[in-house]
Image 1: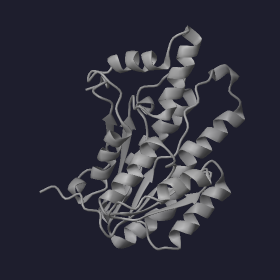
Image 2: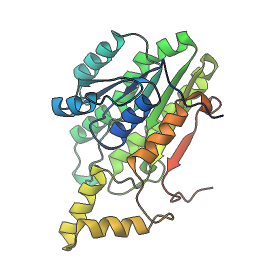
Image 3: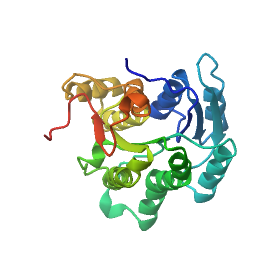
Image 4: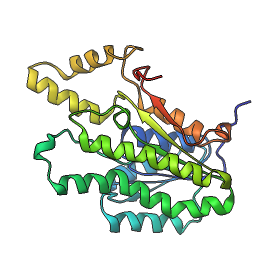
Length: 260
């Protein structure tokens, strides 16, 4: 029997207002975890926190993970309730921009949000996991971290760094019962990809829906993935069913990855 029960576990998910983060919060809670999350707006926090038809609990905080002070405040609020068993570093942005016109500030801001938020949360919650001899850290990276994209240069760099960090930490803390992995979503039908499709449609005089359909046709399974399909893998990695999986990076891309 596959044991996906997370009852009694405390989980943290960063950046859970929409998409993969929101789906992950719901699925971890459905499997029994008590989940704390953050989002930038009070409206998003209230919406997700109000869900009641689940096994675990959901508690939200307003935080901007691109700011050091706001991140630290979120971490301290979570720690007031005790140790964290599961950390899902999901928060991030993926602006499409030209390398030649990117400033130092552009690079620094994205690294603060995508990378340093994960570093700060992992550094803060890892000691408790080690003390309990049980922990799970999942980095929500991206296929762009392994397959660089000319339009997502700084985004890909942050996501590649997340993969590298997870592999290094997995080697360091596996003996303490802390398993650390990366998940690499490909084309997932989220608001981010809808915005990208809208930009393409506006530039070409087409429709966003047609761009989505055309992009989906390039995937071997013939469609975009869903946030829930990514959350399913995350939930598995956070469970005892994945007790011998650590230091790996797993694509959720419908078969697009071309490497062996």
